[in-house]
Image (cartoon, rainbow, N blue to C red):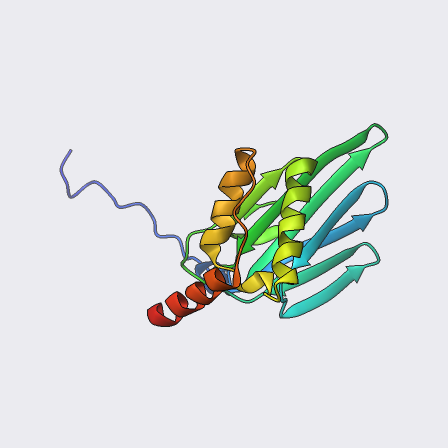
Length: 176
């Protein structure tokens, strides 16, 4: 068989809508509240859009490079089935991300905990940071990674301090 007789595969036209990326640079989180069954809520974060879907569901949208804490809890007649807390940095178009349930498209996971004792410890850690007068959204991402590693190992994370926060703000300013 000669090269002249081999035909190329037919070209398929791709619609313009399919060529565009569906990711617009915002991260959307679906929050749900069903009493005694399912709760999905934001512990901290600053959404750019809050859309009520129905009495039990809301959609929150976050701009790129924002940080939020997403708490998921579920139970049945026998007790708690799921307790999770994720601290997520939203990503921009073209950045790598991890997927999470109810978070579209996903984000960079700074902290990912499962089990009520660890979730409760992290919620207490967030309260301590707020008691310092620091917005948890502005905390150094390295600190959330440190807290994740310590809590997963069953240890207490080092306390976040104003000096550490000041150092983070200066470092961020230098790299901007």
